[in-house]
Image (tube, rainbow, N blue to C red):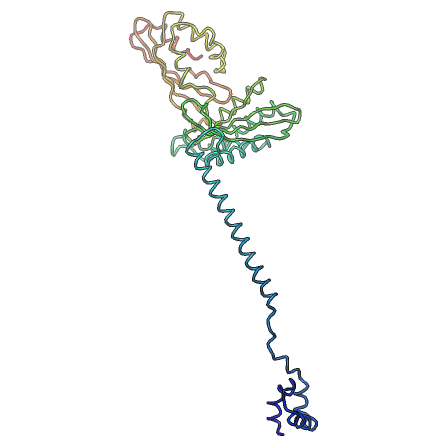
Length: 367
């Protein structure tokens, strides 16, 4: 039997499918042919494709199916959570009820936390930037303020805040605080504002509350919940000054308090506390006791002196004495300590038929 025929029959020979005569011939050939003998020694069954394990295949399919099902469930849960949160925040944004979260309260809480962390951790420069930087740009005439002006104001504010906070709580550290943010309507002139409340606990057992209110102008106002000591009262003034550049509401009651027919009486100490100079209220009362009266008082918005790095109000006071009238025009500079009496050079009186006494009293009306 020839080699090529033997090679073709070897698979059948290996499987025992050849006839006995053919198998005998192949054995005889293999005994005498080294090449075919080596080929026969090879595992001819290695080239066969094994039958698949149906059970293993089904397990693999089931695992893949369960994995995909789990992924779908997770993604569905995430989508449902997103839709739920978005729905709640949307309702909260529209309804603006006290304790329902909204997109606005979440953002406000983020900024409030930055402010509280900065103050309680002694990063006063950061707290000042969060509170007043935008406001500085609003009260500063365009094109007149330099970067150095902003840096100086912020540095001075940070020093004032550091001194006030450390005087009030410098002998202890903040142990912990809890922060919550909600809608509230306590700010005069607005229906609803976003309010954040930080309940602070000190290591010595004292507690304090910081309130951070986002007003309709987008700026933050910070004030403390209680001022039981002189140091805490000073801290309250500094915080309000930095966040609003205004530690008193001159646009309301101060203007009205000047237009009166008699002495301030019970309000005298309140008026006096706004001015750094002593005896301001006495000089004001002297004008009224002389028979003169203030008929009008106008305070401008906050102005910025970029050269002197100070803030001030333009003030116009109109008075009459029965003979005529006079108008005092001046500037009242202020900082976190209060109002400074104007220098003589900052006072101008325009008389219209009034007596000399009224002119003199107006010139020293604020000290």
